[in-house]
Length: 72
Image 1: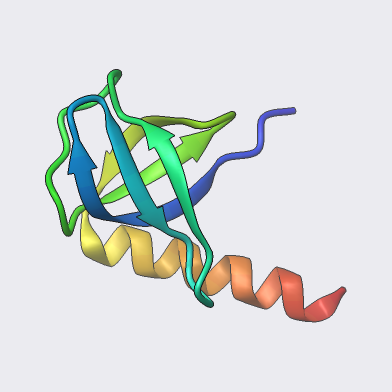
Image 2: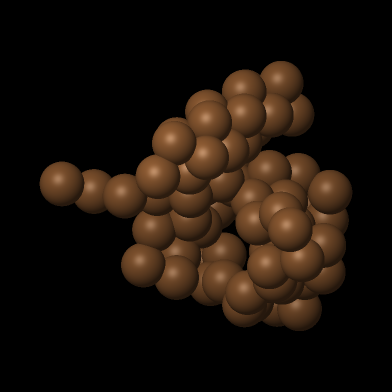
């Protein structure tokens, strides 16, 4: 099973970016596999951005994550 988390790129330096996963959670992510700009949303798996999402798709995914986490 593969678990990938959506987040928003807040800073980019070469092939590394700081990604905001919400609630103040920022992580450094390798973005060498995708073409992404600051402000865009990405899906992250094992420290790598593997897909760029449009904002609507990202917000829906984040809403679903929040719903799942609140049930636990």
